[in-house]
Image 1 (cartoon, protein in one colour):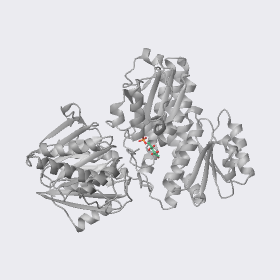
Image 2 (spheres, rainbow, N blue to C red):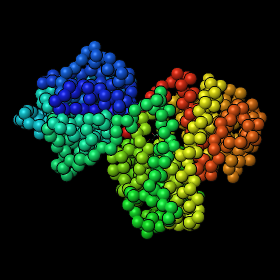
Image 3 (cartoon, rainbow, N blue to C red):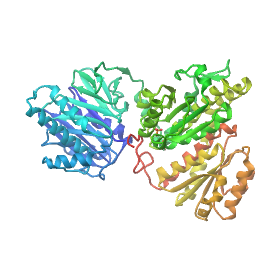
Image 4 (cartoon, protein in one colour):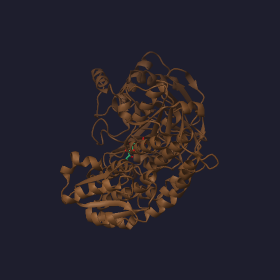
Length: 620
Ligand code: F6R
């Protein structure tokens, strides 16, 4: 949430800042702004709306300078407006900064600063930080600190951070100290890119691709003092740190749209490959099991595990629900799936034999990170199922499994979901094989998993059919999504996809639960999407369909190829290939992603940048 960029070197700063903001726009698109320093002048340009609008402003009113900061905003405190846009200025312009996160005690600090005479121009929590740094700087200078020393400015930031409650990723410029950029992190990610006589700053590594492949991830409570030629990192408790430089593996082509109109569509069509990448190198035919390089637990430790907690948010939580069914079925270990936002404050009894997995595409979701930390603090093995290499969750977990799905840019998660389900299936196989799952059963799972990329390719052939169906239903204002067993989480996910990108009210339910309330919503204007591939309780789902039909509710069904029975009951059918039940979610979720996409397009919505949302939710 919110994207930060920074540059300090010899090139015009605005080029990288603007391109970086375009690449980070998925983190928030309520407003955008940059500040560029030239000598003791810091020029600020900021604007409500998308980064494209900022680019227009910069054409009309350019800025020059070789260091600067930028920000794309997802509003928390104060509505989207020019005044509330970042960068914010502190004091009389001595300090200019950008911020990602939430300052919880901002109201108290604001009153104190107002009493000292500081004037506020925005409703944001960030402006408090800007004034506070300016105030601390003034105090330091009054006490005789050297205005030419970087240490004076560092101290002003340190004293400020001590007074903040909440989370922050900060990039700070000082009017009277050109050539210095200070960054600080607590709870909101920041990466420093290391170039030759230049440094970059970004909320994640994507803006750095093509500029440098050397990156340093900041940890919580670290401050970076950055000049063109030097990078010094200090930790609040342990002092000066040697920057740990890693090599970035992402390439520019990973985030190009290619032939596709939108990232969401591109990512839906990448699923045969992303699923294959999730199991590539992890299937062990000889031992009929899965192999993971990074679990960091030996088989003895794993055998002792008698309960698994999966924690996540949103779509990743839905993948966790699918995982619960599959792990319990094959590994016979009880699994609970917890909303991370609840788990972080709950105190459920968890024995020393409980293993925790945080499931996350971005690896930066604030609630998932906090829930994982809480479990880790209690001594549970905490692992991550994560897509973004080097993300906070990936780095803090005791071990984990990467999805290798490639960057997911569309705000609505698609390929990450099917990759998470793939990895959870591998985990079920792995945990099953160190317990009760037989060798032939393991072999069957491996053979079936290998077929999945082709099954998804076949599924994607339904795209034209989905377009027709979308045209028929796109004006509906309510949808129900219904499925049972493995396809119940798919129903939840289908409903989430539709509401987040088309703004249509949609509810996902276990099909049989419908009778306990939601059936009251069924009428001729409310389509019900039944996810009804052949399964052990197929006749029961058919009965649920009958109940909807009896009330004249239109029915769209996702069914297995050749299922004529469903065709008799449903108004419209999307056929998918027949696969074993535990693999159905990978297949049945695909037409639902396409349906949401096509409906959103017909309603004129911005599918890649839906309103009010951001890709990476780094605030609570
Ligand atoms: C929905 C969506 C969100 C995310 C959720 C968790 O399409 O993308 O619901 O799934 O914000 O994000 P990660 O997986 O990055 O932790």
